[in-house]
Image (cartoon, rainbow, N blue to C red; front, side):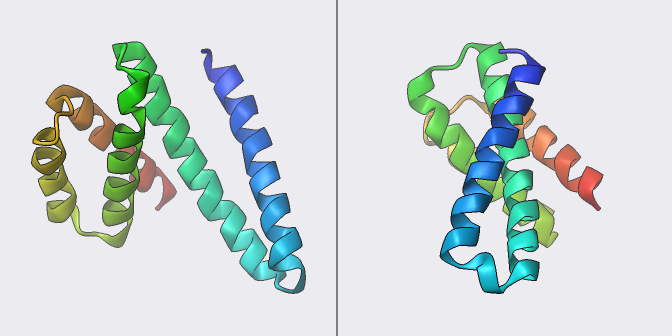
Length: 118
């Protein structure tokens, strides 16, 4: 898929997620809804980047959930500032059968996204 298609799909998903959150909890809390929208936008951007990497590398769709779980965990740890823990995830998830090169590329992308936000 092209970047434009990912971006459009990401925007549609974000609006759908935020609308659902707003109807359930956020109607009385506009600041919380705005914060939720920002955090979901970050995760959807991360998810799109990881899916691009996996598509480019030709990785199995069956393992996509594992790579996405690694990316979310590494992204969270990097945002919290514990880079050493995030680096240790590379070997941990590599032992689970995921390819080290792909994990390193995903880790680099997570670092780029975190640095771009600060």
